[in-house]
Image (cartoon, rainbow, N blue to C red; front, side, top):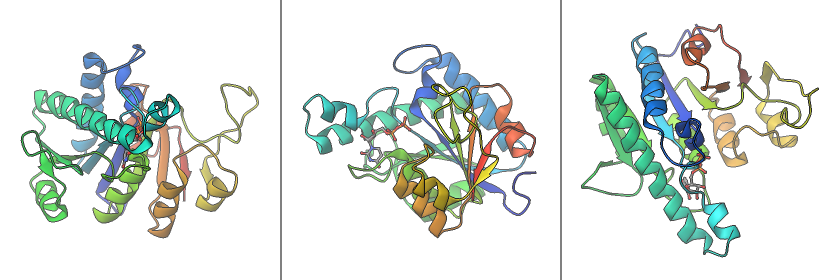
Amino acid sequence: MLLPNSKRILLKLSGEVLMGEQQFGINQETVAELAREVKAAKDTGLEICLVIGGGNIFRGMAGAAKGMDRAQADYMGMLATVMNALAMQNALENLGVHTRVQSAIQMDAVCEPVIRRRAERHMEKGRIVIFAAGVGAPYFTTDSGAALRAAEMQCGALLKGTSVDGVYDSDPKKNPDAKRFDTVTYDKVLADNLKVMDASAVALCRDNEIPIVVFSIREKGNLARVLAGEGVQTIVQ
Ligand code: UDP
């Protein structure tokens, strides 16, 4: 067991894992597959907070690079994360898993606002809470949103499911000799600018002693393996 003393985790999924083989947007079969992985994890007795990125739809930096006002573009990115959250909510509820979406940008007709105590109550009732819209402010990312929610919801770990199977000392796509760390310290990640999460997210996890587990969510069954302590991953601690 990865976390013998904690039954609550925060799972952060990058938006791009929702694309499947597509170049853009949401692949519903992929989202359904991810939902099955999340349900399997929940069925082991874990309480799960979910944060999903928006990079499959819109990233503020990309908009700004093409001349948009950065804050305006970031708000579009945050709205993209709400769409992803609703897609995941739908997929989970198709499996009979009860969920609530809480958005940091208030959107009463589609989801709840972020209210920590209400989120706690949802968890007690066995619901998965999907936190959308990051921290609700531009110039941040959903990694920071994930670190913030992991801290306030007192999660035992932040699991970051991406398309790579951990943290490497150099880019494994460019360097065939790149080495994956089994464990690495927060300070090394920050000092060497290793590609894990943005610096503010890593610092927030460090200051609150929340281990970050980086693993590939693309392989079937991997989330369960990682949670059982049998997967391939990097633990930042
Ligand atoms: N974003 C933001 N503030 C937040 C969270 C997200 O401005 O607190 C915007 C930002 O433009 C970001 C986009 O939403 O590029 C999508 O989130 P992110 O890039 O973190 O998604 P991921 O890379 O995980 O798919």
